Length: 393
Ligand SMILES: Cc1cc2nc3c(=O)[nH]c(=O)nc-3n(C[C@H](O)[C@H](O)[C@H](O)COP(=O)(O)OP(=O)(O)OC[C@H]3O[C@@H](n4cnc5c(N)ncnc54)[C@H](O)[C@@H]3O)c2cc1C
Image (cartoon, rainbow, N blue to C red; front, side, top):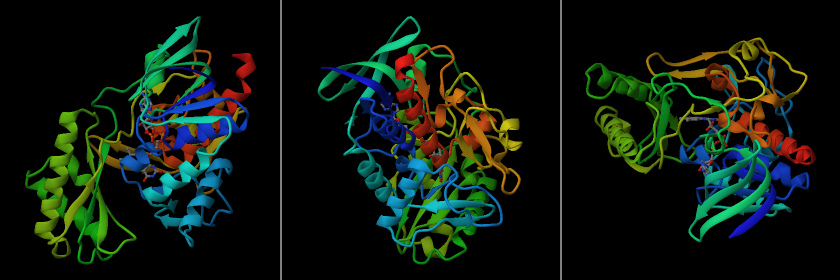
């Protein structure tokens, strides 16, 4: 099959849906290709519960989201599905609660009836053709066979930088030992009464098992979140990055081991059971495109502004070091930094943009930019830029 478009978006996580919707709203004929059969990417695969990075920090509740636009639309639609939802404070930050089912519905309603936008689910981008420093054709595969898509611009929202890698665009990647810990989530039902103490007692009992060398040390960073549904909760375990069938089997084995420890040591978990597990290991850090500018740790912590700043963020630098575990470094109260458009433009492939987890940032800066709220706005700005630049490409 042969298709043609102005803008091809690879990946339908929160960044990809926002990029595709915005490019189409600007009148660009847009195609989105997503490997999964549903939108939402990591947020859905890893059973997230809160959108981070939407708000400024500080003692006063914010009026709205930092970036407005599609981020505001998504929050409004989530609120409509779950009336009464409002941002919750956790430590120094504000989070917007959601369920993955609602997020999928909202992303579908935002994108499915959008004029100029064709959505190709269960479709993986597998190769690209580059001529004179520009991507001309993108090749994708689904159960109908190979699809050749001729396009004027590409936005890589694959999280893993699939198009960046395939096109020969410049990129950086940390060594496997230096990369941040990845995550694997599972849902537990039948918890008698998780109580207020479960988020504390779960890590405590897991740490005990680690101290007794029954499970690997990185499992001590396990987190437990109560669900809105009675007798239900989510456990997020941390494991070294890397996805392969063997690694996923290993993650499932550790999830079962962690649950066994909880069932043995905490009364309320005694008769509980795992009812759902992530299908993949969710990576916090992967390939980062080398753009026209690379955002640094200093830019983030000093609240730097840029002449081409397009997305604002106040999220802390949240790192999940393989040896030291999680840490957060916060901006001053009320401060925010900007992400320049240059971080979304490849430095050597003229019509390649990216958004979400693979933007041009140092590993430390990525520790702040990679959260969902920021990824939504990065996607929106990449979609806008790609559509506006079409005549120049
Ligand atoms: C363990 C963990 C916990 C986190 N917790 C939170 C949290 O609580 N709140 C928060 O806000 N953020 C959290 N984050 C960060 C956040 O989930 C992600 O960084 C964000 O969702 C990334 O969105 P994205 O659209 O850039 O990428 P993704 O959500 O990763 O989407 C990329 C999409 O591209 C698709 N794709 C990949 N390759 C191809 C291809 N070749 N062709 C077509 N499609 C392709 C994938 O199937 C996927 O759907 C967490 C991350 C991790 C790893």
